[in-house]
Image (cartoon, rainbow, N blue to C red; front, side):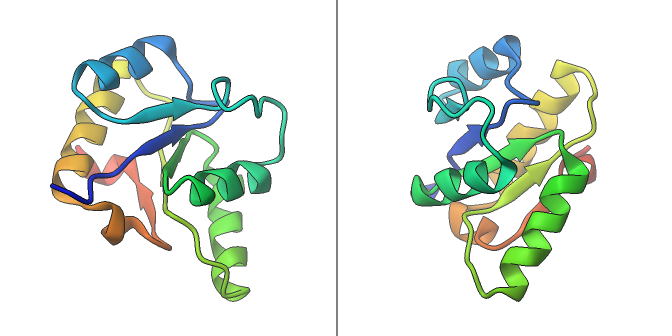
Length: 119
C-alpha cells in the first residue's frame, strides 16, 4: 500500500518492545523520545504528528478523544489518532498490524480509531 500508515508513538505508549516489533515488520515508527518532545502537551504532540504526516498512537484515551473533537470543531485537520487500552504488547501489536493492513494513511486523516475494535 503506497499510502501506508506511519506512526508517531507518544510518551504513554513508547514501549521499547512494541517499537522494535513494529520496526521488525517494516512499520515506519517515530517515538516522542526520538522527536525530542518528551514532556510537551498532547496538542503539541498531535501537531508534530500531523506536520510529519504520522498517525499518533497513545494509551491516553481521554485527552486525545477531547483533542480530536476540538480540532474537528475548529476545522483543524490532523493525520489521525489511534488510542488503545493498556493491554499486553502482543495484543497491541496484533491489533495495530490488522489496522495498518486494512486502512491507509488517507483513511486515518481526521479520524480517531479505538484499537480495541481490531481484535
